[in-house]
Picture 1: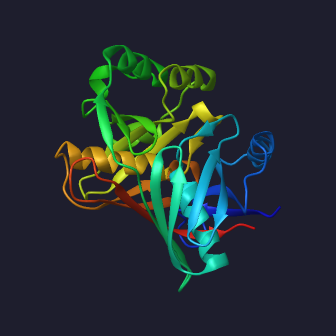
Picture 2: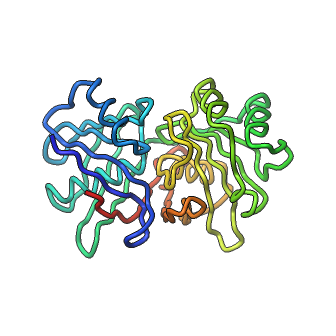
Amino acid sequence: MKIEEYAAFSTGEAGGNPAGVVIGESHPPEAEMREIAARLGHSETAFAEGAGKDWHVRYFAPDSEVPFCGHATIALGAALAGKYGSATYALRTAAGAISVEASTQGGIRATLTSAPTRQEVASDALVSKAAALFGWSKEDFTRPPVIAEAGARHLVLGLPSRATLAEMSYQFEAGQALMRDHGLVTILLMYEAPDGVVHTRNTFASGGVYEDPATGAASAALGGWFRDAALRQGAFDIHQGDDMGAPSRIHVAPLPGIGSGVQVSGTVRVLR
């Protein structure tokens, strides 16, 4: 079994979020997939079974299986392009049918198209608990908190300044309990800069990781919410990972139509 590792949404030879990738005719036993993901210690490892351009994918974090992972999908696209050539690959996931288009010409770049999007208003109880987790108050949030989905559930909290985002910290066990109790994969914290760039941080205690340097699934969910709620129009860029010393760049392009998928793009560097 060959285990490959890539950093998705990298900036040249730096940054990005590491992911493991295992490609084969069939999935290893679930216990083995869990062991590999825990041993690698990356936010997620993607396991793909199939051939050619049609694949069934499962994603494992160190502590859990997740229905969809954006950065591991981008990493998988890079691996598939390296093995089968630049193309669009159909992926079947627990979150539904998605796709990834990848090219190895002039560097590695990949674009995923997410599952359909949906949102719901976050309950007052959840918002209060989330605010307390980070040492903020509900009045600090610049947009009404929502749970946004594009294959996985994320609580989205808008912050008033870049400095507030940079100072984020939380108690890991409390964050893990909160996310698991409410079925959240991550909590996405964002600051919308005047130049249109969205700066984000994603806590991923539900999967056994304090913070992600780049989170494609949450970026897709955010893009879907912006479009579906008519908060922003068109594509935009996300800067993530800077506060972790792993600068990552994510391009988000919502497809037309409320509830449609979202395209998320980035460059990839090979780790091993």
